[in-house]
Length: 160
Image (cartoon, one colour):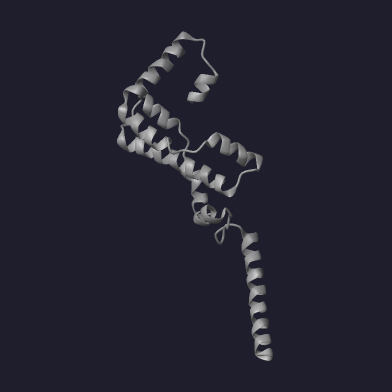
C-alpha cells in the first residue's frame, strides 16, 4: 500500500489529508509499529524473489525464502490482531481487514517438500502423495535398486 501511495500520488486534497491522518495514526500507535517493525524487518526482498519465481529462474532456496516471507507476514498480521483491537472501524482494523487470508494459500506448501533438505542441499524432494508422477518414479527406482541388490548378492555368492 505504501508503494502505491508513493508511486501514485493523489491530487484530491481530502484524500491527501486522509493519507496524512492514516500515517499519523500508524506512527502514533507504538504497539502496532513495534510489532510490524520487528516482524517485517526479517523479510527478504519479496518483490525481487517473486519476480524470479515468475520468470522461472529462482533457486529452491529462494522459493523457500518467499514462502517463509509470506508466513512471516501472516504471523505479523495475527500478532497485530491479538495484541491490538482490530475489530473496530479504525485505520488499523481497516488495514488488517484488507489483508488476504494467506493461510489457505500457504497450507499446501507447509507439507509439500522437506524444507531442511532445501536449506542443506538446495533441492526439492516432494513428500509422498504430493506429486503422483514423482511417487511412481520413486517406486520404479526402488524396484530397480532392489533387483540390483539381489543380483549383487547372487554374484557375491557365486564369485565369493
